[in-house]
Image (cartoon, rainbow, N blue to C red; front, side, top):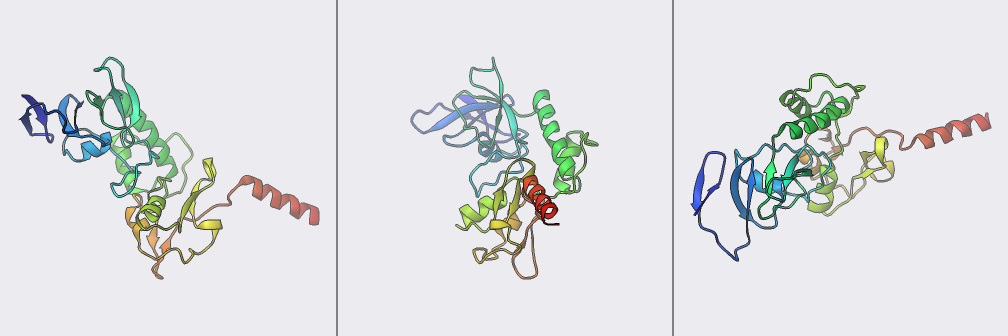
Length: 238
């Protein structure tokens, strides 16, 4: 008989069972058992009080994406001798896996990520709450005025739940953003006004407009090269 935790305060005695697809592993020194095929985050979400894993780009209704990396934890596959960082929303549970969710190294890494997010989105309540929890008072970087953290939840909800592609993540690097296809000012008929994108957004960056269609974050010129070409063309014709 082994003591297995089912939440942060309750444990039960469980006999080892073979052939039932059960995975035994530990989270912050608590032995837990879950069915195979889950990620660390999925398993911990079902067990209140076990582990400390915040997440912004995760939702059970869509496939994991690993965009925000706030869910980073330490894991060991050799019984605790060597640990590495992984995204809990993507990493599958394994027999004998050792998971640490709130170590000093984990908190330091999350703090750095949160500082970057707070610099980008200083007025977003959820980011402010995480910053307070992890001791981020003032970012060392230039403050932005964005609401969107580019988690991709809205895009995945549109594609995976509704079977549409009314919005998407476009461009790369500092030019990455959520936009309608071809940077249209209005959403196409592909948008049925279901509101899933606004509902699933963790920062409130998308709201429903008076016409029943979502209002997306304001987009920028997609590439610096485009702006440079426009200036060059103006100089030639003038």
